Image 1: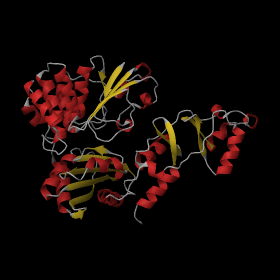
Image 2: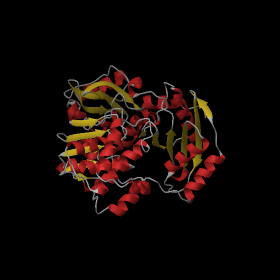
Image 3: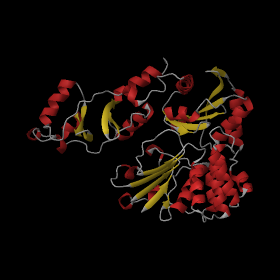
Image 4: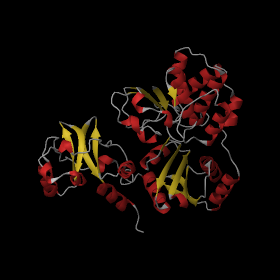
Length: 432
């Protein structure tokens, strides 16, 4: 099985890239995440017979030999791909236009800083002299137009314009674009926008006019990105951030929009564990204080080094390790001597396991001379030094672990613990 997939909350660039990839990789099956943008869902509801796809439930990790990832380069943004993340021998291709590197180690990649990932596919399709149907060309053009703001975002390149010209030559329907690129705007969105305008605040941050609005929302409220778009236009600021809290779900959605070339929304959102582009981005946060989120965004805009700290700034190094052959009795003595709760287990420079105090619950007294490899956790969750603290915290919470080896190019370079992340958060957040 060969599969093509993209990030959660797929937009038109993601959708178009998936189906453009299906032309280039004719044997691969398109897999879409459960979460789709409302206008993308509306498009598929009408055109589902023309663009068939599967869901993550259809994936058999054992039978999958190739994974093609489009419009993202990070594992955490994929839906239902955990079974493939640790699979050895998996052939991975990545197509992406985001400027920041990710943690998906590809066998082959096409990653260039253009306005839309679909542009990269359109270029390849033109090079291969592929003939497209009107609906295919229209979908691909929608992907480019959406991510370049109809060719107006500063991230737009000449390659995006050339790709658009190729698709228009292939009879892309501009009327269809007008229909589906205009998201739903109904009573719920009007109410949210009215409340935001009623509570408008502006402030100067690093020379930019910025508005940060905190607001509670009840129930499912699609189209919040459109609301922030409209809010930014109405209040006429360089950047606008909507901090939308759903109390019943104990989560906060942060959506940012910018019209200033020097204020990178995508970079800000990645520091918060989300993602995006220079002009637009979002992040989903759990169990946070909205006031602290507002402060966090302001500090990121101002370039506060603590707010933009990476794992490499917090990790401990050099790291004390044990080998797979170290007796458990010796490990117990080392844990007491070092005052640690666990050690990475390494074979050369590669991390092959983790041994922690909780693993000793499985050890009987007569087994204390057994080697570490008999009791260590061989399924190692690791992290890249360029990742954010939010990503580290999420990994530790999701996997119920207290430490993460920091690995670069296959080599152990540090260790970050739950204590490190908590110290960071308590130092960062203002006094309550």
